[in-house]
Figure 1: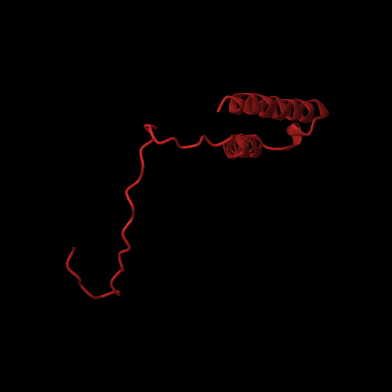
Figure 2: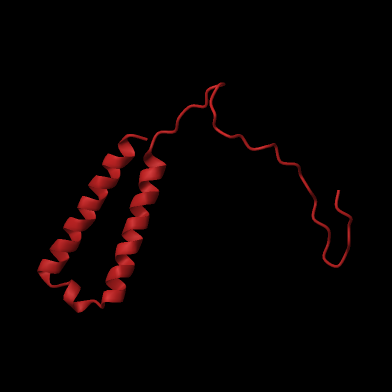
Length: 87
């Protein structure tokens, strides 16, 4: 979890540098602000997804306080138009 902050900081610096270079080249002047903001939101979302998926997972230890989900029970769904009482 430590390195996720460095990853995100590096990613945002990369996106900022790319945006500044596009601005200096005059590319952003030709694109409407809505599309520029949309591209920025997509880039930020992509960075967050990449940071979360690239972070190492912590091993679960027997004494951890991580909540565990109860085992799910398989329920069959009734056919449309039929009624079944709740268990």
